[in-house]
Amino acid sequence: MFQKHLRKEFARAFSKATLVLMLPLTLATAMPAAAQEASPAVAPETSITAAPAAETAAQDTVFIKEGETTTVAPETKTALDTLEARYPFLKEILTDVRGYNEEFKDNPTQVLTSHLRDAENNIDIVFVSVEGPLTCGANSCQLNIFTNSGEGYKQALAVPAQSPFFVTKENKEVSIFFCSLEGERSQWVVSKGLLEHKSNVVSPQMGPACR
Image (tube, rainbow, N blue to C red; front, side, top):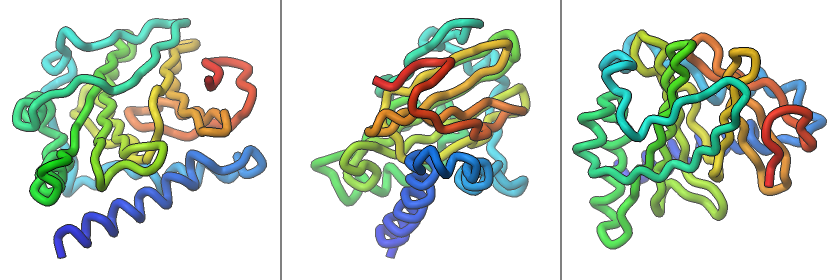
């Protein structure tokens, strides 16, 4: 029952997220509502807390700078216990991963992270890619993005996505760009500690081009 539940939950999340990331340009105007459904704020009773942003910053943190594009491909491999000690808000995800690994001992699920910081706006962004037999499709794996603007980390997005991702900062606004296999780019903006969908375009006029 435990594994069936996990597969069901992941399938539901995958279905919703695919609609958000892969919808054609003609449906772009409908994206904000779908985006809100795909990336709900954490409910108060399940809110996640962590040490202040300054305390979690480490040597592997990449600083976001105005006018620059940062390419993000989660690659930091860390033991699950060590990862949970650094990022307590990952406890639920790591508990699921431990469950996956009990079933697939010969093909363990890996958790890869990248930590970005916008020092000017006091925002930390943690990308968490979960890669394993129950979390990866043909071209993408489960991606969770957490943000912290000084009040503890909150889950800002949970989708299947292929890396790399691109993070830019223009006019003090931080954007995350996702690319589909067709070369379409989806732009999400960090707003008040959460992510809001902004646009879907094929030939971007600003920010990085898909390649």
